[in-house]
Image (cartoon, rainbow, N blue to C red; front, side):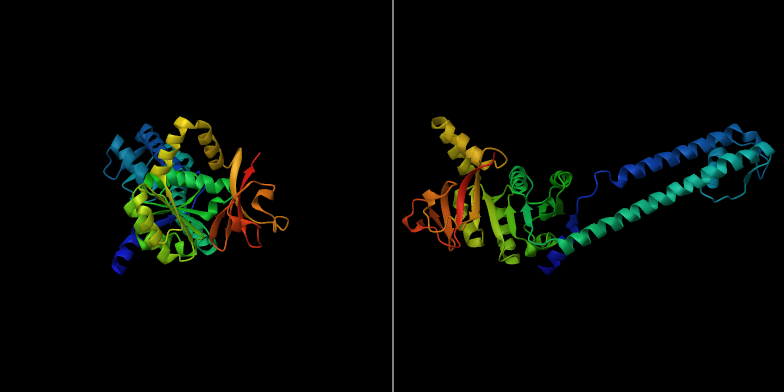
Length: 341
């Protein structure tokens, strides 16, 4: 297992969001410019080829001009071809020498750009590792994972506190464009989850398309983060008990929930509209969990300003019509409905 973790760690890697204008385009522009300088120098030398001669006294061909321009710009200078007339030497002073300087600056600058970008990337990753804590790890950046991240953002979770784990490079590219820190690799491997610093995470959201993978990821995440809140998406309801035993705090059955919504839509379409409104937290109604205020303690759930659907007391969920939920006690957390507008 240790050997497998080492191999997986070699394939896993953290990628911290970088500025949208990366060094790739700048390096490509420099290479194109360097090639243009080389071609221009070849043309200048070939047009003035009568002022040059090789060590055997032969006239310059186009290949000789390209050879002379290449060795001159790269400062190799074998000396087998040299300007012999004043006009050719003047062209070397005014054209070839400045082109050589610019050519070297481009080559050195490109090398420094690559090295500097690697250093910046290592610095960003190191700084992220030092600063990140109580973050949210999202395993799987498909449709469900993106929706989970969108919900987190709507709840005010900053981008730097969300880490996406996925083995699909296209999904990670999308996550990177969205400004998220990414870790490439399978979430079923402990080494990959360690790269995402799951042991420091406040919550883990598991949203891959495989129930079997979700079970294994849940077991691994629970072992690494005993205190984190683990939420899992599952396709088949029969896998819920297995995920509960594996350490999942919340299990969402996507296929059953979609089926129930479709069934409701045929008979009570407005109920579906309300549910959709509750699930969308940027407009309309919004479900929220918050601590009970001092003014609400001692009252019943029906007496609060915000409609109370349920309350959490000592880890137990009590619905608003539960007799034990009345009155509200200190330390209770209320699940309420609010109007975002």
